[in-house]
Amino acid sequence: MTSLTRADWEQRAKNLNIEGRAFVHGQYCAAASAATFECISPVDGRLLAQVASCDLADAEIAVADARSTFDSGVWSRLAPVKRKEVMIRFAELIEQHREELALLETLDMGKPISDSLGIDVSSAARAIRWSGEAIDKIYDEVAATPHNELGLVTREPIGVVAAIVPWNFPLLMSCWKLGPALATGNSVILKPSEKSPLTGIRIAQLAIEAGIPAGVFNVLPGYGHTVGKALALHMDVDTLVFTGSTKIAKQLMVYAGESNMKRVWLEAGGKSPNIVFADAPDLQAAAEAAAGAIAFNQGEVCTAGSRLLVENSIKAQFVPLVVEAIKAWKPGHPLDPATNVGALVDTTQLNNVLGYIQAGHDDGAKLVAGGKRVMEETGGTYVEPTIFDGVDNAMRIAQEEIFGPVLSVIGFDSAEEAVAIANDTPYGLAAAVWTRDLSKAHLTAKALRAGSVWVNQYDGGDMTAPFGGFKQSGNGRDKSLHAFDKYTELKATWIKL
Image 1 (cartoon, helix red, strand yellow):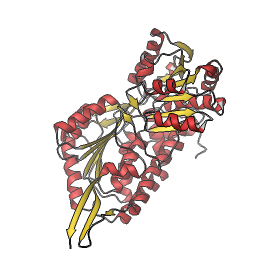
Image 2: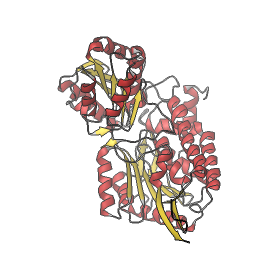
Image 3: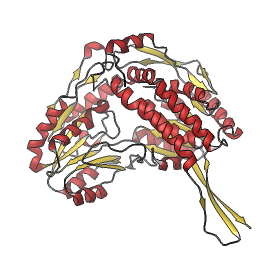
Image 4: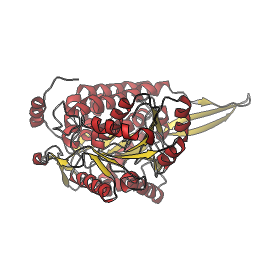
């Protein structure tokens, strides 16, 4: 970590050189149309940079470049051990530039600098390193055949990958895609969110410095309805990977069907239940975890524990513990290392969150904590972590993904009722269960329709655990060796001897 103070970070921000251009074939370049858009900091509303606004013309150039580079074999046919060495150098460069990348992330997206530095950048580097380390340790298969035949099952890089990543963890989500996609030999075009494009643009240069050949990793900033759509419809993109909203995920599947049936892997929305039974081993720990599960990263987390299901026999005791625990999560200046709640990403998201808070009031939920915009005088977009009690699972705040620090508390009387409420959602990304009873923990976890289930904790796991969702939370998995499946094709080669 670092001993830098808020004053130190603010001084560095003044001296920061921000790159806003696209990156194609190893060089920064303006959009073909020369169009740009303003990158505004949610910290204080100031202009950070003019960013290239790419569109169809840029997609054509970048995809052609990625395809020719892939076909050349300069990366796709490089020995896995050699790709591993380059990937590890890439991870090392991310670590060496951790303070610059963390500062870009905080200024661009609004998250606390301590999180950017200690979680986002370090985890991003680990994702690249882990994937690189794994690639020369994965073996293909030899089929069981008669003595005069040889059956080989091999994995090959799929080709050109377009990665469309979200604004809430811009660097980390990029590296979750880049790690396995690059390690398996593909060429990648990254489309960062227009709300937070700066770290994606910056690491492209670090990839070149690490030794990744020009054309293997291109970056096209811009809007989803322009360059994002162009990539999704492109006939020469082989795979599209996406993290973001369920609405956009569905549209990307349509685009794939309208074009070349490109593989589409999606990590979409969530409305994750955090279930606390009366026999939870530590109610105080569960309350603190429930507060963190909704307040961390300003609630702008796809796995946010936005529905807190509490057994009614302890509800009157437990909810005040959560209300007290949420007091430790206070919005503050994101460049202050002591801050643990920063700014929402932009005014659009601010208004969305405030609109849901009003909906909670309108539908009859009881506000027991937060609920207001704060620090408005800074020019930034800050909202207090908010808790509604007395929520019915049919209410909008319980059914729709808010992507902000708004918690819905729902009571239940039995494990069966808890599971029914938990699964009564179009999403299935994550869930948590708090109980001392081992059988109850296992049975509840099995019954929950979610890609990740955490027991007596919230948000567990690391790079070794697959991450993804059931139902309308998407398909495919990030992290772990299972992520490699998204970026490779299986080939059966049968040889008559």
